[in-house]
Image (tube, rainbow, N blue to C red; front, top):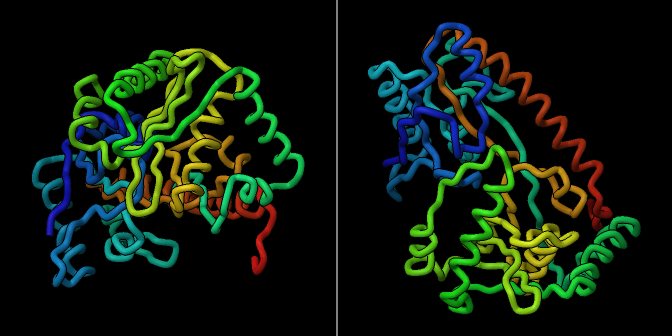
Length: 329
């Protein structure tokens, strides 16, 4: 068994936000950094964080890894271990503070529940089939937003694998930079060389959605395709066009998923406006072990309340989906 493990001196690029924990620790005189992170950098995607041999006893081996991580933390005077975007199986093996579990040791792994907006393909044959799932007001709004591209003379195309020409990687890098430069909190994690490596080594996994006007690339998204799922990553626009963001990031991506027979589209963290466009709430899970007993108790209380709020919000969003109920629901 093995797991990726990073020593972090900040909380950047994680998408499970613990900045308030770091602030509270500082006020309490607890050094929050360095901390240990088990996760995939800059990637808010659920997946296996513990890698196990095929013949391993999965729950027991996960518990061994979890214990080893806590020992590394304690033996090296680190504040905490964080296992982000882990699977339900990993939670079941390690969590001691699930809604149905209690523990007298708050420094053991505490469950944190968040949520994202995901699109599900329910066997749609085309985009009109998908539109038919909306109530009339929202359906007409999406049609108006889509028509705006024709009015503005914008053409949008989804390209995968070898369809992506070499000359598109630099414009997509410029789109990535444009989003960072447009936001005061933007942080550039990727450089031009990274996009060159995508071109040389990872093209077969990519889906570029490219918007052109008068033949010039004006916007695009860099996405990854794996196991029937489209993962939305980096968006940017080089020219302002009304409704361009919704069309490039969501509608064109959904249309590609339907055409390619993909099961799901995960556009990344955040964005309540995704709910209005047919993306429904799905829970995300992470595990956290805090070494300092007093601070661990405070975090445990916070997480118990946050879990309750997260479940209530997920239920509310699902009950108030903009999509019409399907047969049998």
